[in-house]
Length: 166
Image (tube, rainbow, N blue to C red; front, side, top):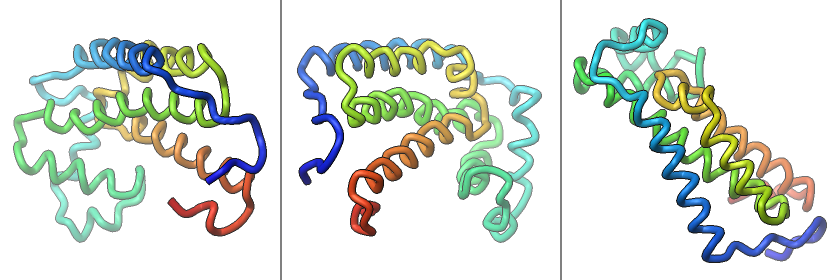
């Protein structure tokens, strides 16, 4: 679909992909050190309390991102001793957030090196790195925010119900 307004899409070349892969690898390296095999960090223990409830109660919980409590509870119930297993979704969300922000900034039409700088800022951010291994949904929130911004801008460019469709 051709863009009706705004700057043309920035071209993504081979070196852009290599640079993004290096940024993502560095961000992953910073985050992996936060995985643990010990008990949940004292601030994450309350999140795992959802594992004590049945699926019916979990479906009605809405204190965090929809479905987050359910998914985390199912992971925790599969192996109560594997705290690192429950950290893996947040780690994946944190790393995907780096790529999502790069894609969003590129889609907005920013030229090199702005998308790389945006991805690098998220990759090295101490807050983003820390919460990519905690059991809070903050890394997921980054992905959801990128999605909302993408859909809002897509609708702004072509205000029609079809613009919100995938």
